[in-house]
Length: 143
Image 1: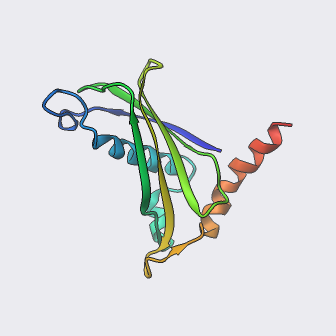
Image 2: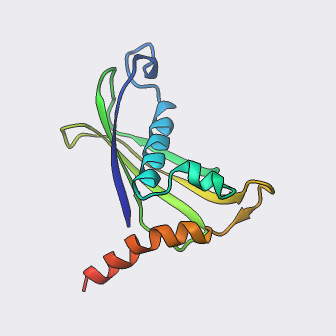
């Protein structure tokens, strides 16, 4: 399993006329969490693209629990539970930093495509090879 926590500060531009984070911004926070998750495990998006792949979004879901406001610090917890699947499913939990207050939960699903053809492909070898150790060691520690 892969898990990473990234902190972002709510900018004034992220809020609506009511002073609450605009709902569309949560997908941007998911993107920050996703890119930092991959970077933390040695796979920044730039590497994926240099290898000739992209990761377009197939599906996204957000469930809002509590409002976030200007200048709040938000922790974005991003988790990938399965490696050997055609789709990459990433779960997110957004919390107000320093509390257990959940602001939103959700997920995104992505698929690898070859840049030159834009055709969907299975996760490439470099991706599997880089992340495989983080999945095999966990399953052995449960014994």
